[in-house]
Image (cartoon, rainbow, N blue to C red; front, side):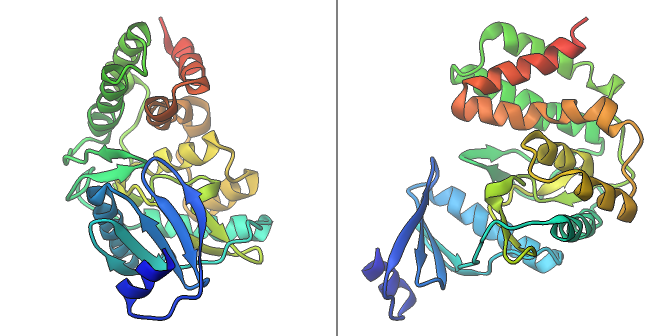
Length: 276
């Protein structure tokens, strides 16, 4: 890998160390200067590069700069990460995320389909957020998981029934918000208790609540984060009690589709709360 990167960037590289491997790519740290993603899925790499550039241009959210892109390689600047995040760090993230969510559009979706993990995330524009979430997120990913044999038919049918009822529970937001879309600890880079960058985006214009629900699902950030976010940008009443779990259906379907296993039971628990 060292020789390949050296040739691609026309610069001397001492060593490239593998730091991650998933269904999309192998990731290398080259000299603490470059993060190198190597993948056979050129469409996913291209979309990721576009998303990073979009965030860099239209928001103040820190993201790695894109240095090089071709069919099999995406090279960005390497961002050090020590995983430290105390309460002041959580407050900083809350403020930066609220600022990201203030970036708006006149509809829900995006100008092109983006990605989440190994999957294409369809983003056809909708005027209604509830309609977008039902059609572009819950129904599309439930169907994908069912067709790929990861979601049993009975659960698939229950998801679709609940999707038809979402308009009774969800609300239309004040405005569409630009979201990162995939915030969990692995995509949150911190150093010395400060946010360094968010990586691996899955952006689109959405309800900000879907982002907060995703963060809660994996316990990525705690009560301090939510209190600070609410102080900067008030969270609509009823989110935690009524809507948060409904917004966790989508990331659960993504994980069911990718991994199956225990995510099926988590999905079923939410369905049980809304089954009539």
